Length: 200
Image (cartoon, rainbow, N blue to C red; front, side, top):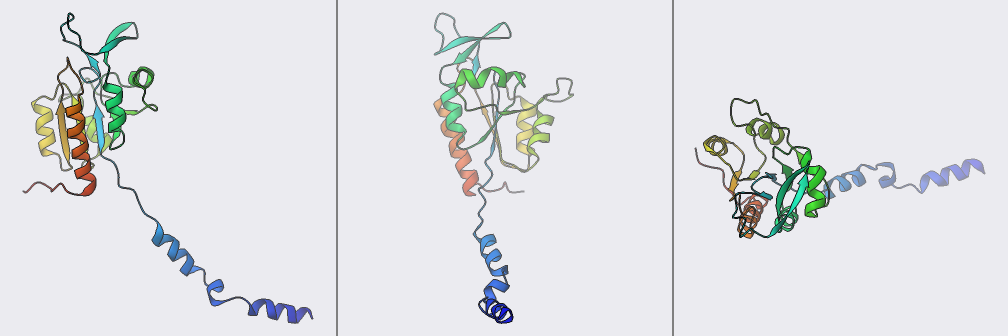
């Protein structure tokens, strides 16, 4: 009797049971990968923390104390960054470095801390370029919003192999709706593959 039970048990197993590979193959085929968002490198001074405006006619915003220093934060910067976070991976690219995460997510209503670059103030060239290259690599799409893109930054962007966009702000106004629209359109082009590589 015991021998018969064993025989019937084996006879009920199908070829599919004995060979699980088709199931595994099906699972592998069903996996999809989300496209990698472009990076958005975010300066703080002149983009979020404003200066150089007429004190008699200040832009919308408020003062925030950071390590005993008053910074005038744009009233709309938080809203703009939250909208951009849907299309980009945001990264602090500022002399504030880790200090940005100690103050700005709470002040701007951001969901949490962002990655930040450690900058090289002793660099021979532009102090932000080498850290950007180390973080982003040569090919990932990178947009960079800053109030001070000099000739070195412009030359770097033109020579970089990956898609690169520089967005310059007025330090007394900071990031605006126009900047957000430009950045979102650029990010959508990158994710859709609509942007063509420059001709050699």
